[in-house]
Image (cartoon, rainbow, N blue to C red; front, side, top):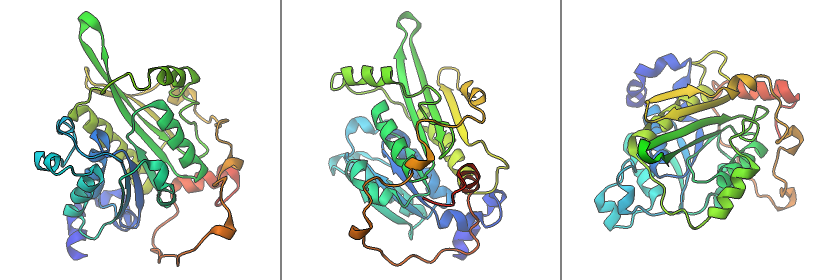
Length: 303
C-alpha cells in the first residue's frame, strides 16, 4: 500500500481521500477496442480498483492500429480484447478486481449493476441508447464516446466525435438530439452493409482522455460544482474539443425520457435473488456529488 500511495502522490489535488475513493470504485467499460482500451489503461494509471469489462471480440490484425496494449503476438494467439485490457490494468494494479466478460454486454448486466460509472465505447446508436437506458434504470452515470470519419469528396475526410455524460435526472442523449428516431431508422436500414468503420489511435485517445476526466469529476471531489450534463464535440481536423451548444440550451432541463419512477430493474423478483455478504466499505468515502443531486432532484436516496 505504501508504494501504491507514493505512485499516486502527484494527483493528490483530486481531493481528500481521492486515492481511497478510486481504489474502492468499480467501473464498467463496454467495448475494449480503440476507445475502451485507452480508458482501461488510463483508469489503471489513475488508481481505479475494480472493473467490469465487456467485449465479445478477439484482437485482429486490423485492430493493431489503435487497440492499446495489443500486439502482433496477441493476434497470433487470438487473444480476447478483455484479456488484453486485464493485462494492462494488472501491470499497474496487480490486485485490481477485474471481471472480464468475453460476451455481449447484455450478458454482463448483473455485474454491470455494481458499477459506479459505465463508459461505453460501442458502435451504433441503438447500442448506445440501450446502454444509457440500462444505466439510467440503475442510477449509474453513463459516459459515451465515439468517433466517425466522413468522406467530404474533394475536401478530403473529416474526423469527428463526441463525449457525452448522461447522469440520472439530467438530460439524456435523446434530450440533446444525439439519439433520434431518424438516426435509429437509418442505422437499421444500413445494418450489415456498412462494413468496417475507419478508426485511428489519436482521436480515440483524445475522446477517451476526455471521458476519463469526466469520470474523475464524477468520482472525486477535485472539481467544484461539475455539470450534470456534458456534451462535447471533437473535430479531429482542427484538433479541438468544444462544448456543444445544447449544453447551455438544456441547463436545468428535466429529462422526460427516463422518469425517476422507472428506476430499478423491471424484471427484479426478490424471491429469486441470492445475496452475498455486503463487502466492507471505506468509512472515509463520501457520498458522490451526483448522488446528492439525485436525492435533491427526486427526494429519494436510492432505488
